[in-house]
Amino acid sequence: MDDLLKNLSNEAKEIISLLRKQEEIIWFNPQRGKQGSLNTVDQKSVADMQEAAERLQRFAPWIELNFPATAADNGLIESPLVPIRLMQKVLDPEAEVKGQLYLKRDDILPVSGSIKARGGIYEILKLAETIALKHQLISLADNYAVLSSPENKRVFSDYSVAVGSTGNLGLSVGIISAQLGFQTTVHMSSDAREWKKVKLRSLGVEVIEYDDDYSKAVAEGRKSAEADPNCHFVDDENSEDLFMGYSVAALRLQHQLKELGVIVDKDHPLFVYIPCGVGTGPGGVGWGLRHLYGGNVYVFFAEPTQSPCVLLGLATGLHDKISVYDIGLSGKTEADGLAVSRASRPVCEKLEPSLAGCLTIEDRHLYSLLSMLEESEGIRLEPSALAGMPGPVVLSSSNEGRAWLAENNLTDVMKDATHIVWSTGGSMVPPEEMQEFIARGRQEMQ
Ligand SMILES: *Cc1c(COP(=O)(O)O)cnc(C)c1O
Image 1: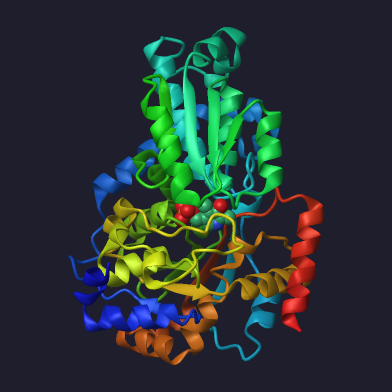
Image 2: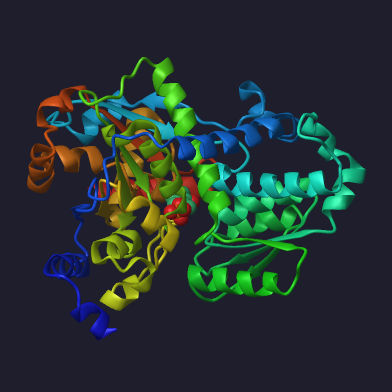
């Protein structure tokens, strides 16, 4: 391991020494725009995203029937984009952020209350479609609501689904998979919350617990699934389906921005700040946005100071070959879904050419921001979902941020910028636990 670190560039070594200090930092990706112009819109990638969106559209009648909360959106699992002006004032009393601040409310996504309702559900629906077509239960033009019939569910019950998860992915995959009729096993790491296990077991999902971190849960899940040809393993670190499911958010967001009359172009840049664990969720969204908006969108991943695995993977160029343990960090954070020690390799490879950068945040600030948002806007998020919240202020007011904006000729257009903080979860947290989060945040604010 020492060899691995010895051969790094001086820039990478400097970043590592900052990360070791566990301070909050913002890091700008030197590779952005270096591997070819970002101002070309890649039609193939857009077509892939559209294909995923059409698949979700085909399932809309089934989703609406099984999850009535989606009826308002006709069976689409989507969340609102809302301005948070009151929070913006509290967050930034000096008004250093000139543009408009929005919250993308994946915390209230129907079905599973987190961003995982995008990727996890998409992957299982795609699996169900493949099996249903093979058994001629449906054709592409049919109303997929028929998949709810007892006969069709019996066909699905010959198949099984497995996933390794810190919690939210297991919850998403488990809920949808059990509803379709698949036999479902969720391998959970030690940091997963009790209520998620209880909820899954109540749906007939088998929950296997490990006294170890997320990578272990994934590895064990992968191993047990390999033995069974009828078992589909949802691989959070490598799955293309998950990634594409998340990317559909970019198409939907583009539509929402248009409806709100928000322009995105060279003079109206779009900044997006998304909490990041292994990288698949924020990666899918970021990749999708890059292919829709080219160089006019700037995506930042937000990670806890103890588990900045994607920042570390990209800054060193080692991607998944280095873990936060290798530089002496604990990997431990109370932010569900973000306690990940090693980045996804495909995500590092796909995002390296376009990602704007990463920022890190301490757990105690997740809590104080959680209370601040609750008090100002009445919006209740889980701690992880706040990770991106400091992004706009750090970018606009830190020395590093200002220098980077100037280098990228953005200083003068920031007054017309749009900032979107991606809220990744919260609505399924039990009320007692939410009260504790809020109380803890109030303490942290003092
Ligand atoms: C999973 C998760 C993320 C990050 O997604 P990754 O795909 O692991 O990077 C962020 N926030 C919450 C609440 C999550 O559950």
